[in-house]
Length: 362
Image (cartoon, rainbow, N blue to C red; front, side, top):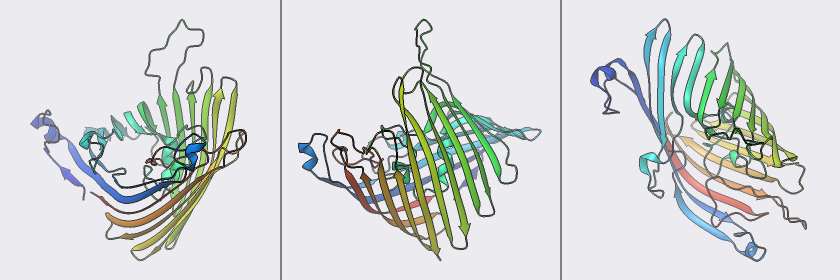
């Protein structure tokens, strides 16, 4: 349960008068599971591909803790802030509270919309969130395949050093724009100086059981100087009675050399059916055709869950990610379960995971 607190000593360095004027909310999510993860090819050398690996572990997933607040400035304008960190809830990383910075920043909100500077989910990433059965950082997530190119580019990003703007909601419509400048110094005298800027935008409609989102992101000089990597996705979702069904179609363009690029086409079909407090969800994602043969993968994920309350969920889940087989030319799929697979990923490997867990939001 989120609690609105006045004069909370969240930051002892703040003065009591300043806290007394702020409207502050403390929130978070505890999300852990016990899982068994398998890899049928543990190594990159041909001989090592005969090896198999397995690990049983407790995964902390995207457990997090945050604090956010606002200050009324009058004329329907307010200053806003948010600090959110990922929690190392199982103690494996040993980082505790500082396991990673999540959506954090400061900005303004009013009739014009909202603007924030800091670190935040990109508009491109958020377009897919409405059809993700799990948080984006689990072994079961469809984002192990969706939003990723064959050579490891990941568009499911939380972008650092960015500025983002959201329009006001107009009925069910809203748009977002994000720009991240190159934080590293640019060598002006260089003949081909890199300027690694990122631009992302989205337009979404969410009303009366219908969701549609279109996202685009471009990354200048990310792979090679004077090149631009880019991605575009269309996501839809329809809710009817106790069920919903969704789909994503995506195209990811990646530069593999200064004058060479290829496009990966990615698809997902997903749905969920609710029976009272119980539910079953199924997702199928496919990274398919590209300019390079046998560089894709497919993933299927199944989730059986029970909602103990609006804030507490228990589940069991299974996923299998199957990479394209290795060709004579030496190409093969190299997709991986994003939360990690024992002993690395080999070309053409098949990975799977089975687990049971629980999440609680507050």
